[in-house]
Image (cartoon, rainbow, N blue to C red; front, side, top):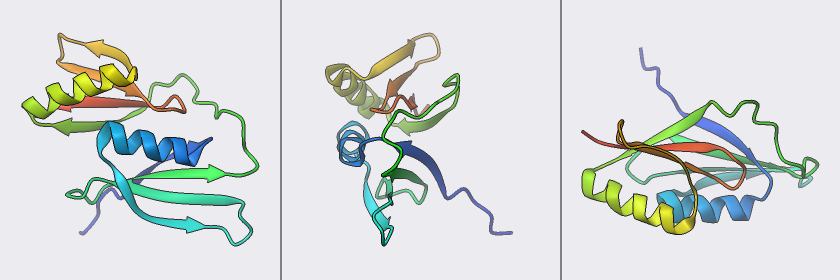
Length: 124
């Protein structure tokens, strides 16, 4: 069976702000986009060059308010090598987007412009 995860969706208020954040914070780049003929939505798929899994950012014109993220207990995790982990941690601290750290587990979380949490895990 050829069954695999393809993407995860985040609805965003400001597509340009979100794209800039994901590029700077995680090095994710645009892979493709879909634009509604009437301009009512734009969907952009972003990801790492070496990975097939994508994050789908969806902007909806008629939904300008913040999205209700419930209790915010869901997240997407990203992994990186030891030295890269340290460099990313420094970058995220400089960006001011670190929202939770768990040194005992060796992980931390960053928050995107819409309040979604992203877990950063070092490869062991």
